[in-house]
Each structure stands twice: as structure tokens, then as C-alpha cells.
Image (cartoon, rainbow, N blue to C red; front, side, top):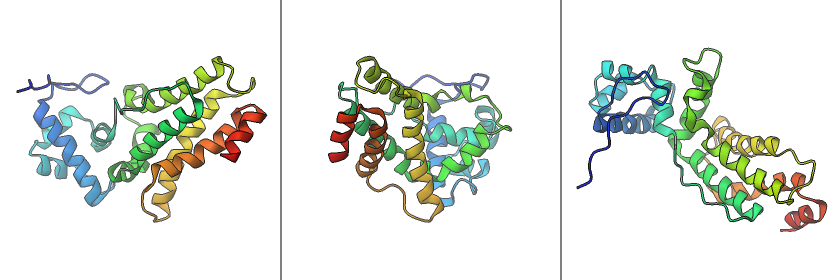
Length: 215
């Protein structure tokens, strides 16, 4: 029988030690309730009732609903496919994985509110307190940086801007569907196909970009 994981603290530090079972129960309750009542309707009281973890305990571990939800939907180790050295293949795999993340109902439901509550001027902690935010961005930056170092991109290619565009395109697709009343992303591979082909046309040398356009 595997040993229980050790108690944990909030990534930014300062929270009380967490019982691992109660911690997991609170996160699972938040995910379930997001699908049922949405982010705006989620309360600490509802999470406490669903999880069996007292509201005072929840507030010792997280400052507010936003921090609890952020941890509940974050993927510190999201299983992004490893790099193969083929830029187009790696980007398609990466964007497909990211689109699948934003296709999750709880992620789509929580993202608009989390952007406002955790990333705005009234955020309770600096962005650096949420290291999971950078997992995907760091990976796509690495993909582009390696391609540039290998001479596979145009010399003037702005790889940092390209990385931000990739992340932004997926988030925009997910939120656009939500705001227009359409269902969440239903085909991550097709979403990746469109985004990657557009991005690469602006980064690759003319001959290679033409190959992408034809493919």
C-alpha cells in the first residue's frame, strides 16, 4: 500500500500544513462545483459542505475561493509530449495538449474569473506565487528557442512574441467559445492544426513556410 503524501503548503508559503486527504477532497469538491454552479456561484461554504473540510480550515489553506480554484485546475506537471526536434510536430503536440486542458469544463468555467481575481491590480499575491502559470509558457518558449538556435527559423523571428501568441490563441479560442455560448473546444487536434499553421507562416524561411501552407 503506497504511503500517503506528506502534508503540503501553498506554493507561495505561509499557509498552515495540510492533511493530504482533506486537501484532495477540497480540490475535488471545487472542480465538481465549478461544473455545477460556475465560478461566480462558487463559495467556500459550498466547498466545505461538499468536501467535509471545515470553512475555517479552508481559509487557513487558501486566502479565498480564487486561490483554491487556481490550485484545483492547475497542472504543475501536465504531461506535455517531449520534444522530438521537429518544430511543426512539437508545436502541434504542444498546442493539442494545451487545447485539451482548456477544453476541460472546469477550466473553461474558471478562467475568466481567475484572470480578474488573481492577475489584476487587486490580486492577493504577486504572479510569481503561482508557478504553475508558467509551465506551458516555459515549454513553448523552449521549443522556439531550440528551433532558432538550430537555424530553423527566420533570423529576425521574435520567438518570445510567437510563444505568447501560441498561448494567447488557445486561451482566446477557449474564452471566445464561452462568451459566445458555444461548447468548449471539442477537437484539440483541429484547434492545434489551425493555430500552428498560422504561427509558422510568420516564423519559417519562405520555402519552409510555403510547405506548411500547402500541408
